[in-house]
Image (cartoon, rainbow, N blue to C red; front, side, top):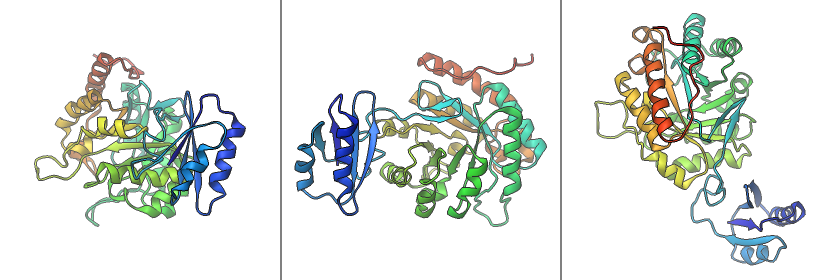
Length: 347
């Protein structure tokens, strides 16, 4: 249920409604302040008489039942697009924000070389895995805390905010100490203990779609984070599992306009995991921008053939520069912005 306040409703009127909602056992109120109106979401087991009660309060325009099982992530609750700010980077406006870097942090040299290269090409955020969930227990699992320290050093040297994955609820505080954005990977999209934990931190969270997660299940996962009080959630389409075996996953680009219709949360696309093949990353990245994505998550490695993880889907710095040129062209045609290269490309 949502309570739509009248245009010009006073703060006192808003707080009266909130107080009434929260006076009920196990009820919570979540306020969403839009450009024109304030909307109050009612969380709890709704009873029929509540609608009539709330409509009598001064300043209330109407009370609506939310048809979706996800309330806080629904556009019904929050009609205006959410914008997530990370330093001077805003995700969810008319700029296509590119996050790029290696799948795994392997060494200081590898990370700093990649960080400088992606920044020079126009990336706004540095990605890199310190803790890596791997299908095989014998695969490289990441450098752990050492990797987090290297990411922090790369941020210090380049000025790029960093995004890295957190795998367990117990590691949330540790990773949040270093990271600017916490990433929830596809394998953990329904790890509810982890979702509860990141809902309590004051850091943006990037929530990847699971291998077989429906749109509704994905938005309900986001609901856990929002219900915990963290309103800085970014969704990431990274491909789903289908019958096709040529690509690593099937990148569901329809997710971009669907999510933008259903939810106010920003959505980005990960064509690296979505395809698993480096030569498909650029065309699918451009398609993602054309579909309306607010950003991209791209894997880049100075020597993909020697990468300890996901080398087959990683772009070289040169290929990443070419991708960024294409992204600027597509974004420009749609009236969107992309950061320019920070350094001229050598000829």
